[in-house]
Amino acid sequence: MAHDPTPFERFIQGIIPENPVYRQLLGLCPTLAVTNNMQSAITMAGAVTFVLLCANIITSLIRNLLKPHLRIVIFTLTIATFVTLVDRFLAAYMYTMSKSLGPYIPLIIVNCIIIARCEVCASKQDVFTAASDAIGQSMGFALALASIAGVREILGTGMFFGIRVLPAAWPDWVIMALPPGAFLTFGLLLGVVNFIESKRAEKKIHKG
Amino acid sequence: MEQMKNNFIVQAWLVLILALCFGSSIASINLALSPIIKTNKINETMEKVPELVLGINGAAKLAISGKKLDINSQMVTIERKNSRISYKVFQAINEEEVSGWVVKASGQGYADKIELLIGLDKTMESITGLFVLEQKETPGLGSKISQWDFRKQFVSKKTKSPIIPTKTGASASNEIDAITGATISSRSVCSIVNVAAKNVRTALAKTPFKINQEK
Image (tube, each protein chain N blue to C red):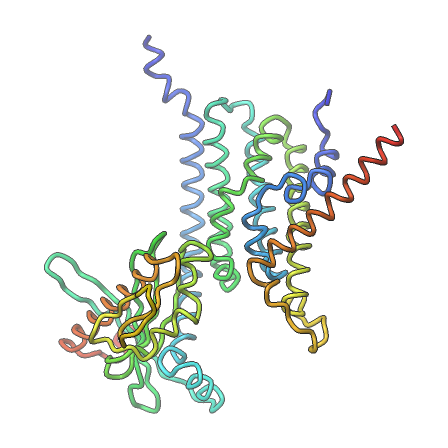
């Protein structure tokens, strides 16, 4: 690419073309671990959005002061601070959710999506671009979590956001709520996304 | 050459300043939020007391009958040769009779501190329930200590002989099945329970529980 991506390009790329989960295969630990129901998936996505947005903005603001060999330390420091804030906030105001997410909130510190965005975008571009990149990528992450959690919660418990959507006669596929269900759902959805993407690429070649 | 000496500090000034700013902001947020988090924990403890003392069925029956347990709490301190250990102990009273005790105890787990609520019967001779208030054990392995399948093994165990986790299938009355792949976590929970039950029993035998001394 000859020019740096514009804020709008950054925003759009994060959602589908460069979706952090389906296209970059980053942040898979929370993707697999907290997607057995919609509520925890959305809380997780919200926490990641806050951390990513704040970390991107701070990194972008200080990007001219960064020394190449110290940049990772600074990224980690920034990310860890905001993750701790989110963790305390959830423990204070959403206690049961904080308990059910358990160690996965502190584990956002090592979520590769955030450090990748600091490295790829925020440390090179201005604040506005970094912020729209953060929002785009978080929406992509939220979309991925919600798609997996939706499938798993509906098939696993017959419910959606804790409300019954399938008839009571539905034999709950317990495996979908358990860890294997996460891998099955993720694999199948990843296959679907790849299939669509390859069809699109074919079309482009034919047109070109 | 003089500059080389300074170099490390000069290069790291941004890291140092950021660390100071971030550290102080986390500290102030924690100062503001910790009372709320503490209240949340106390509320959770109070909610769990009936279940821990009376069992799940007993707590459900109590809730249906519309009655409530009276709960008194007190810090119990054990003096050792070179250390002091304190436990928060809750006394559950049902119709003016002590129906059981709940002890809050913590200890080192595999990853971080494990905090437990241990339910004991009125004579403190057997365990009536176990609940994990806080743990940061490995997800999927050690974190199973908070599941009912693991916790139920402690119910009606005697406190006289220490509870031992085993990998070969529990057979003796004081054995429980350890979690596969989480031997340390299982062992930590057992030792926290053993030590706390013993300590609180001896401490209360010396100095009886004072009702309503501290809420």
